[in-house]
Length: 105
Image: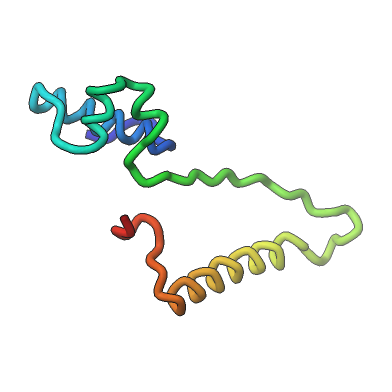
C-alpha cells in the first residue's frame, strides 16, 4: 500500500507505521514507538518520535534579472549548491561519521 501523501515528519511516520501494523495484526508491535504510544498516546509520539526525520525540499523559481538577457545567473547558483552538497558528502566520508538514514542509531 502506498500513501497518497507520504509522511513528512518523524512522529507522523511512527504513527503511520503503528497504524498499519494494528490494521494488519490487530495489536501494537513491539518497540519503543509502540510503548510510547501505549503509555502516553499520540502526544508521546509527537514529543519523542523514534523514526528518522524526513526532510522535504521545496523549489522556488528564480526570475532572470532584466539586465542580464544573455547570461542566466540561476545556472551558477545551481552549480554552487550542487558543489556544496558534494563537498559535504566528501567531508562526511573523510571523517568516517555515518550519515543519517543509514543505520546510524
